[in-house]
Image (cartoon, rainbow over all chains, first blue to last red; front, side, top):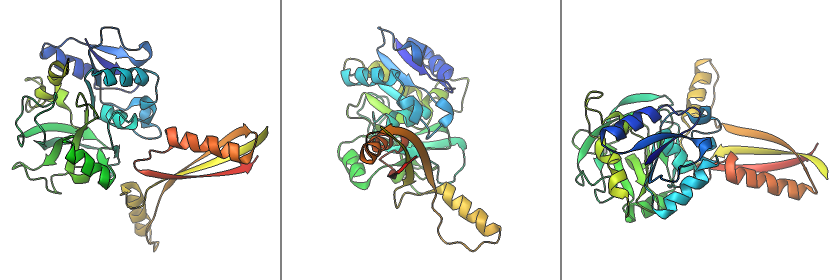
Length: 229
Length: 83
């Protein structure tokens, strides 16, 4: 069962459960204070505005008791995916490197973006090909990925950059970078590739009747691909 | 035990873009002020009891490390005063 961890202020938890259901994956919303059920074999940290974005987006949720449990499961290899606010929580909890902070525009941005699949050999990207261009929606005010230069080089060397913002032809231009993220990075994996975060919303591009596309389903199918790795 | 106030100032590391500060700077310019660069910071004033100034500072630094600052993007400083 995939636990979609709901904090006060999460608002993409239902969407995530519906999208996972659609893919035939057993998923349930889990209130953070209730802890992770024993049969948890995947964890999705959903989007939203947990704790009202107090202090910094994701800072409070990252330090809530359930996250110790999330970390322990992540270290055992249980697939963990952070989306949008869940990505901010993942970085604040140091499950993944770097930090997400205020968009270059200083505005909340809600739009479709192109992403280039940088590494197709992860649990989250097996349905894509390296270099493939997909389209997903973003909806965030604090999505600018920041990381020290030497750490970025490490990520690059370890193939841990999963997605980069790009234009329709796959060029990672500054114009195609919606939030000013360092090196156009949109998603990265943790020390284990079963843990990953990204700012765009795969769960909003999975249901065929909902969106302009279903390019996001492959990422969510990572919960099946990631098991037992 | 002595009563102290630890003031923790958290600011973006040099070189990290601060769009909110830039927006604020532009707004000041629009109001007719002649301003150069503008930097913003968050300040937390924490009342606490400790055996010494150093002990209070050590605790406040741990608070900054673990919650108040994000070491990826922030620097912080701690100043402890008697309360």
